[in-house]
Image (cartoon, rainbow, N blue to C red):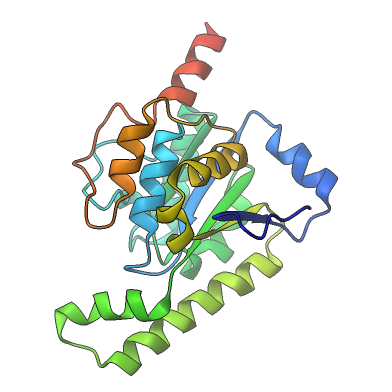
Length: 223
């Protein structure tokens, strides 16, 4: 797999290249956005939505589907079955999803994982706002969870997209292009809105219409 060392998002998989391309061409896909808390996953979920991937309905401001946040495995398995029955392409975002993904992975339909990496000091300092952690503890927590993400990527037989938060916000259109190519989505038509959304500390209220492009295309094809 050819890697552009200047790109904000870089694909990776332990699978052979031909197998990865085969998976990307399948009509059914499940997209999971993960990383670390305060690590840029909300920004990346918003980009993924804007590329036409449905990440849930009635989402809160952090774009996390409640069915995949601190729920028992049985509950999440039922949610996966329900989403699979309703949609060919769907996904969700949860920063610490790696804590349960090894158990859930085999139940997902053609999973594609987007892992966001951010300067650990920047994300660690944001976590200190609550005042209940030391800086060193926050940094160790970030590194521990990110190491779990990398270990999961090394072992899970699926495509991954590693995204640099810092490069993504510096090159928003190239980031969207990488996400669209990886997910099988589309680069959003309103690039001005995309750029504005991706600016740090500028996330907009949840728009229920965003992330419906792929779902609508599939509905049209089935009629």
